[in-house]
Length: 215
View 1 (cartoon, helix red, strand yellow):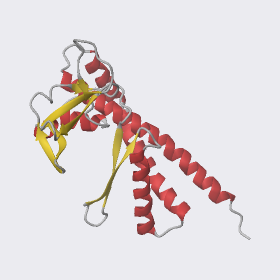
View 2 (cartoon, rainbow, N blue to C red; view 1 turned 90 degrees about the horizontal axis):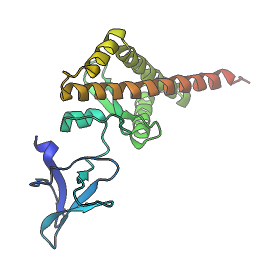
View 3 (cartoon, helix red, strand yellow; view 1 turned 180 degrees about the vertical axis):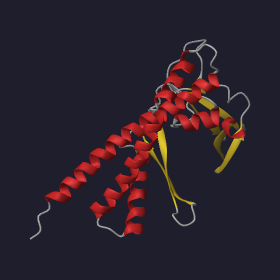
View 4 (tube, rainbow, N blue to C red; view 1 turned 90 degrees about the vertical axis):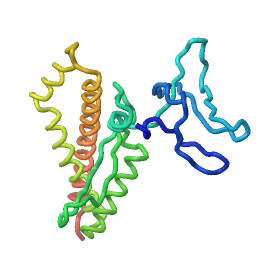
């Protein structure tokens, strides 16, 4: 509850997470949010409109460039079309089963999080298998392809698809359930995108390997 209602502000050079009365009322908006800050001269929290508003317009805030999974977990809602959707990549130790690596792949395959995740995975496999750069990339995309195909198969299960369609079409379905279904569909779209990326990348890597002619 506190996490979903708090604001990160800087007061006289010190950072705080603070509860601000009334400031937690605006809803989330990606297109025309207001921004906020603490004004040391006024000694108060100030919100700034970032586009034109007419009298009576609803004031919105941007809760951050978060995927639906994070919006649902923290704020209790999900967006129909979220450009910041992402899925988590988890790697566990073969010996202990403990998590050794976690990163996120975005819907935007060229996004900052995606690039960071690919770099993290690359150096992980490079250190573990000590292979050549192309062998390391192959391991990396084999891992992504395996988990993407597993996720897509799960989401495309006919029984699950029919159940989702039925729930979304029903007037009795609660808003919480609808948001959960939106978040699940968001993850499906991201995994499906990365499955195609992994397949294409593996094809390129193997074509290059086969094209190498030994002297």
